[in-house]
Image 1 (cartoon, one colour):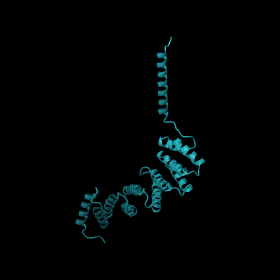
Image 2: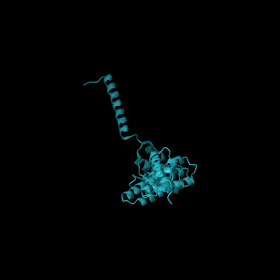
Image 3: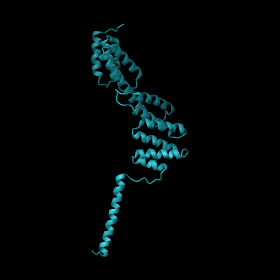
Length: 262
């Protein structure tokens, strides 16, 4: 078959278009190629921004290892910790943030790293019935953070997380109280819930604790204590779902036991 110039021109245009399309498909299929040289900070940053976390960790680690005194070394170390956080590899992230504080103590990233370290402790915690050691570690860590950086931009989140931790502690103790209730040990229930009120004053669940302790006090005939719990609930938590029940329970106690028990 013979081709004239028009045919050849069409074939060339078609080949160029097909080649361009293949290139686009290859790049889009495997993600954009990293345009930065190996061993550079920008290479690790690029991988992180494109959610290619294992490659980001490797690139950032290589940069810090080969350039420990570079002005971007602390930032690379921080990004490495952040990458592990996004991968939900919290123990590894905590270690990286600890390394940053140790190796680059004058870096402006130390404050951020310390905050993220606390979040790493907290995010390790699972459901209520599982081990909550991480919550204890997070609480102690954030208390220290609050002392070191009282004006930190992270303080609002620290306070909110501390309340979440307190709620978690309360739920754990309520589960413990429930076990003693099933074992027919009401005095133990009263004691446990009293400790909760003393230890977790910042919890959002105190109204529930007051309600359950009031009912437990009734069960062991400590009517003055039950009244005290219901009065506190009604006074301090006017929007509580337990308020109406506490009001009724208090009225009944005052009707049948108007005088304080000795």
